[in-house]
Amino acid sequence: MPGFNHSLVYISECMSLGVGVCVCAVLAAGVPRRFERYALIAVAMLFFGFLYPDERVLNAAEDRMESALAHVESYVELTSR
Image 1 (cartoon, rainbow, N blue to C red):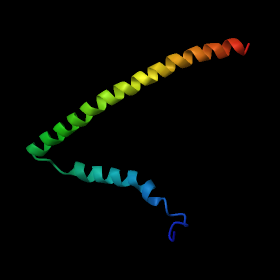
Image 2: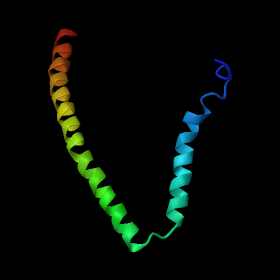
Image 3: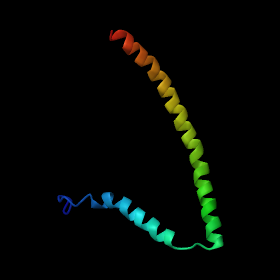
């Protein structure tokens, strides 16, 4: 495809973090009205409320993996002597 063979093709992925930081800085400069402040608090609570169960499931899976690897590591230590 034309236009995809040069070194600047990945600049959009690299600049997405920079653009996000700049957008946050612009938004932080404004003073929200009372309704907007409460709406932002509600959206943040909703977001983290949905994030909590997902994180709990991931932590449980990580704990299971650590306990399984603890048995493997002790076995490797015994067999490597």
